[in-house]
Image (cartoon, rainbow, N blue to C red):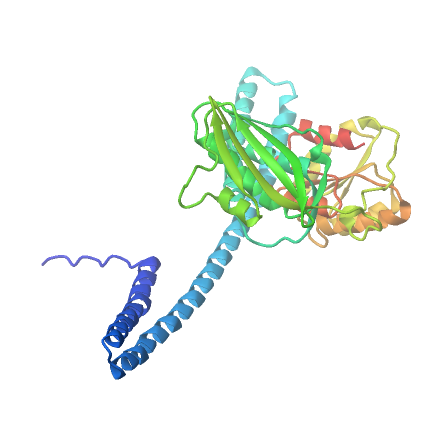
Length: 443
């Protein structure tokens, strides 16, 4: 008995194509044919035939317009569904990244601390294998983070106050998460413009740069050196034109002339009201693009926590690490203990709060030189706690640096932390040397 073949699945695009052909193009063709008949019969001197053909042409034309409106409505619904699916996927990846980075962070820190102890050759070999395996896991999570960072989200994030330099540097840091980019060198040539403050959506700028840099690195074999330069290039209708120049020491393709579909960076640049030009000279490649951004105004009376740091007096006496009093705000007991083992021998006093509410109570009764703040916690999260601490500081006029220590490493997390008044941001897994550097820079 012959086997019945399974029918091939009909894709949504095929259904839309058939619907467009049968319900829009066919009626339009009939209407067009009737209009042609009406024209020819009118030229032939007939009276009633042209009128009848013209009246009949309105029927299929009306049906086509009706179906076109239904098709547009259906397309909008599909776009909304796809956007919802993309947001859910991003949320799943964000949750996964957070959950896996917590234990990974502990493994990395324990590996570093064990490496400082005296071990036998066999223990040292096992420890090196442990550290290498942990490093491989970190690379996998980082690659997943990078892939998510490259996916555009059209969510409007409102007006965020940001400086150009840190945004570009943080983007370069995101690029380094991908081990496929390790052979490439990305340099930000800051000539003073990095300190300029703007208001807008810095995430769009990050997505443009990530797409351009990734395309340039993947379009050539071997090591490539990329340089980023930004400068203001005039003002128009209250917006500042900011010009970005990306250059490479090798022939690379940033966008590519006439590529279809258009690269993500090209669409985002156009949406921002900008243009680009890609050229090559010898072995070097250049891409110049500009986008319009709004310069941040001067702050007269700060109303948001993110502005409270500015103008607030700091302790001008530089302190040594051994003289510091540090508050760690962290709900996970294992994370608390490992961070304590890492920092307690280095500082004068080390205390722990289990959530943002406890941190606020302790901040009101004790003096700390620096706060390490986790973001996701029960009772009160780190973002709200940091915002309330900045509000309390308005009465004391003393600024205590806050470093966000978070298992989130997704695009926009840094801006979210800085927007509520935190001074710096470090994502798990933490490198002890990097954390010490950040602490030392703020005290």
